Image (cartoon, rainbow, N blue to C red; front, side, top):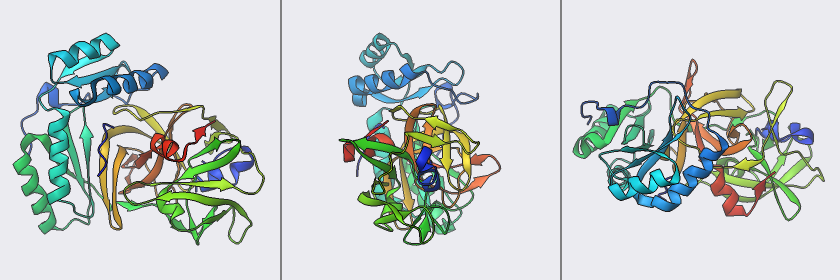
Length: 355
């Protein structure tokens, strides 16, 4: 298992990308996340986050954005790590549990409570592993999950969520592959060739993708990875040269010029062909989701709303690409549970870049 700290596309692709757009302890100050709106990170926050992660590695228990200032907060457990983080320009918070302890808790959950309908990931704001169990988890399995969590003590927090965790492919719709509709995330390039990235559980379905039911093929699958990961890549074969944008479904698009890993506490948007553009906050990283047809690892949990057909869509913040939509347990009002695959991993796997 991998353990890491962490559109519709545009112009001529308004057909393709958009369519493709296919046991708890008492609360303490260190355990309580900021009760404020999600932060909008400055571009420098992503660079600082990556630099701190490279420098500190396991010496940090995770990073998040201060909801009021948008500044990066680094959680540490040692004096040395605190000095290094401050020197890098980050705000520092001392916490009780190290990255190793949180990873050990997740390894125990993986070994003893790998139950379909559950997910878990690190929330550095609480310095805990945040576990969610959907409505499909039986009373017997819930008791098993709670027994494991009780042994792990205050390192784990469990919450029941409505709906059922599922991959959000939908039959019929704008972009078709194997009789199903998904959404595209981002247009990417390598050596002058143009591609788009989407969810791996979508590209598993079909090698050929078209913009309408029975329409001509616009792209051919060149890579797919699901489960474990959830990303795939499709090469344009119709001679188009689509723009590197995401559809905002209001007559305009968002240019995408870079990619980064999402940071807990930050505001994001999701663009998909079913629920269009929705907004949310990043709540956990290094998330394991136990779908019915296999687990995925190192995902990101958000509060954005989504629905069937949004699979493969874009998670982004301004011009920064963050993730490829994977699935959710549904949406209640404006509160969702959209999960995304970090896009940087897919870009690295295929040697492509956003543009």
